[in-house]
Structure formats: structure tokens, C-alpha cells
Image (cartoon, rainbow, N blue to C red; front, side):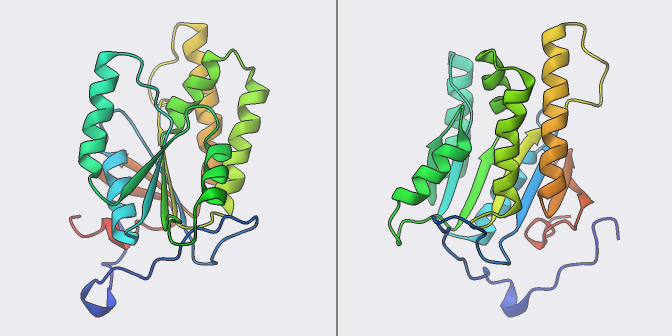
Length: 219
């Protein structure tokens, strides 16, 4: 089987019990998975990450790194928000998603703790950090903080990132730096996430681990 054996679900495919995120330090539940989805533009990576999160829990937190700085991006964000629908909270964190998430979890009451996290996306985050004229070492230090979170997530975590390393080497130094930093970030995140999926044409291919059963229904 290309995507692993067909999934088996107990109880007719009922949603698995969700565990709220823990605001305290250290790892969350031993079963809390971390999932990295990488792919090109309009590959379907965000949609698959959303489907995975929605299948896991009812209280979901979307950590958004995008900054809507023009009309087109504002409309794009609105489409994403409409597609998510109810059951989602949104935390805007264009520069420090780890710090923003830590503060959010610490301030949320027991009944408001999210049960699943979705960070979208690493590529826009790297771009935002480059706009601050941070050097590579400073940016990768922040990536390492995200990798530490992904290695021991407080609850199930999906991270979305772009794959930009399959084309020609860019002509401009700025674009080359971006591709280099994003490639290194993806490698560091892939090293710690339990599952890594390459998404192409809306289909997931497991690079590490297996395609989660939540994504196998229509394959």
C-alpha cells in the first residue's frame, strides 16, 4: 500500500478522546503527536492539516503567522477563516509563535484550553523574521524553540510549511537566503516531529511515520 494499510477504527470511526493542552512546562500526554506537512503553493497542505485537527478535537487553536498587509492577502486570510468555520480560535503570532502560544496557554482557563494546535505557516514566519533584518543564527535560534515545542507538544500539534527546494536556485541573494533558511527550518522540524508528510496535488505522502488515519478516508 502506498500510504500504509487501510486504517482500522473502533466504534465506527468515532472521534478519539481529546486531551486539553497543558500550560505548564514539559511534555504533554505521551500520545500527543506532532505532524509536519510540507508542500508547494496550493498543494493542499493547509487543508489537510485542518482536516487532521478537526478530526482530533472540538476545541482547536489556529496559530497564524500571516500578516495581511495588502488587499489580496486580506482576502486570502478571510477565505481561510471562512473555511475553518466554528470550533476554532485564532492566535495571531507573526514573529514569535512559541512565545505567543506559551502566553495563551498560561492565560487560558481549564475549560478554555485548546485540545489541538495548528501552526500555519513556517514559511511566512521565516519571511517575517527576515524582514526584521535578523541574521541566520538569530532566525534559526527561534526555529529551534519551535522544534523544542514540536518535540514535546502540550497536545496534538500540526505545523505547516512550504517546500521551496525543488526548483532552480534563485537568482537574487535575498531569495537564496530565504530558501536556505526555510530548508534548514524544515529539516530541524522534521527531525523532531513524529510524522512528516509531503503534500502534492492534495495527496499526502509519508516521509516519516505513516499517513494519519484521519487523512486516509478519501485516499
